[in-house]
Length: 342
Image (cartoon, rainbow, N blue to C red; front, side, top):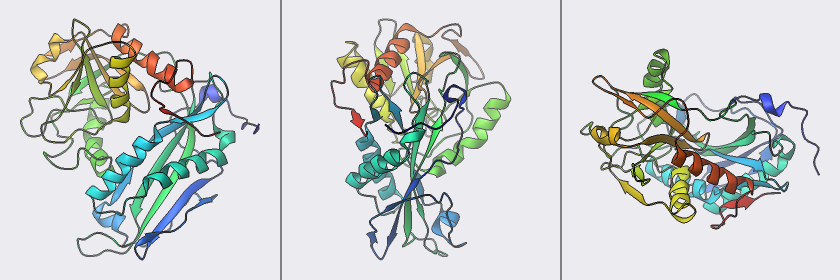
């Protein structure tokens, strides 16, 4: 048993701190090298690197955590590997092999076992795989050299005082272009959301609700999460995009399976018009960090939709409790989602 770091796990925020090792692999002359663990958390590259000029970068996010019986596990890393593979192809980067992605996650988590928070603290080890263009590029074209890295850092519980509903505004900005890159996990999409996010926070909102960029009549996603809605009859409604501009969230897909196979709910996956969301009884945002963030209010110029800021809706609460229970080992994992590391 590895001795844990002397950290007040309960006071951790969602912030970066150095751990013992990162993982790094470099692509050159048409092939990825064998990769290695490194204690060096810095990156040195040319001022002409493709990352700097043409934003060739993709990333992922997942967590390692301690289960009730003491195992260190992560959740569906094969899905992160597949999504990063697709993201890389979309912006002309050499995809990192999916099996090597999962192996690299295992290596870096094992090497940083002392940084994985104990069960019951609410904290986790956040895992951030990313790939950048390091080769020189001055004309507009893909680079010929790349680096794949994984950093890990312990982070606190997303909700320290219990899960609470949040308030959103409908953004006047678009998060992504129709048939653009909204369906991949690339830094360029998140850069687009920064200005609207800062604006929303300055007005007291937790995040934005972005509408579809083509007609601005359908709900898409927030700055970093997918939406879920609940009908009066308990049906779970999951927005889909006409224009491929919603990121395929692994948490969202997992919650759909939980709804259907654990909770026996009916699920509708379809485009959701903004003018119908006042007919729903619950709303939530889903993603790796919070699993589900319940939404209590959505404000636009001409209307305010109230779901309730006092408590989490029953369906969102049950969905979140079930998925986190599967992740922690407290509920049977019917699908083999939980990947044991140590």
